[in-house]
Each structure stands twice: as C-alpha cells, then as structure tokens.
Image (tube, rainbow, N blue to C red; front, side, top):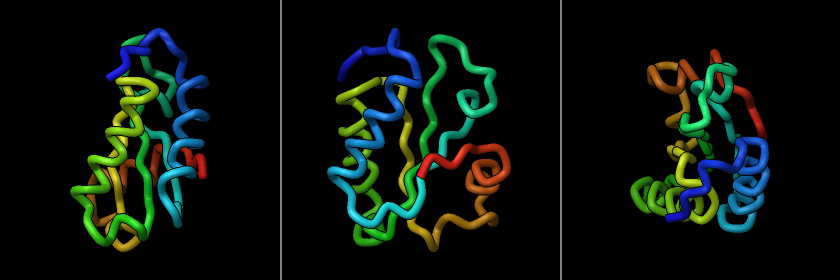
Length: 106
C-alpha cells in the first residue's frame, strides 16, 4: 500500500478514474462523497469514491477487492465501495446520502 496522503485529492482522483477505466468495463457512475465532496476534508481525510458497474454483479466481494487493490496503487486514503446499478437505490441509507450530497464524476 502506498502512503500518498500528501498527494492532493485533485491529483489522486483523475489517476484513480484512469485505473478504473482500464480495469472495469461498463462503469455506469462514479461519485465522490463524504467530507471531500462537502469541502470539509482535512489533509488526512479519506477519499470516498462510490463506483457503480454492472460488472460487479458477478461477485461483489471480488469487486471490492479489485477496487481496494487499484486504490492502494495510488493513495491509501481512497475508500471505493462497489455498487451494482440495481443495488444503487435510495432505499440504502449510504446510497441515499451519496445521491443527495455526492459529486458525480462519471
């Protein structure tokens, strides 16, 4: 794992999006959420990035591992939960929060 916490979010996010596009087909959406999206982050705040893809339907556990491996290559603050389009519904409290306060990147 790389400790690149001195790297800015504006440096880490574009690089993470490139990695996502290289490794995950059918990305439906990517959202930045949490303190980074609400401009209340500190230098040590994590970078919450929700990734929505139908590719994850086959095995959500493996999807989580893949996203963590990709994130670890860039910045140990990136927290990337995977979602399928079917699972990305407002009935899930986390998804509701992401939809309400997050910033759609893709």
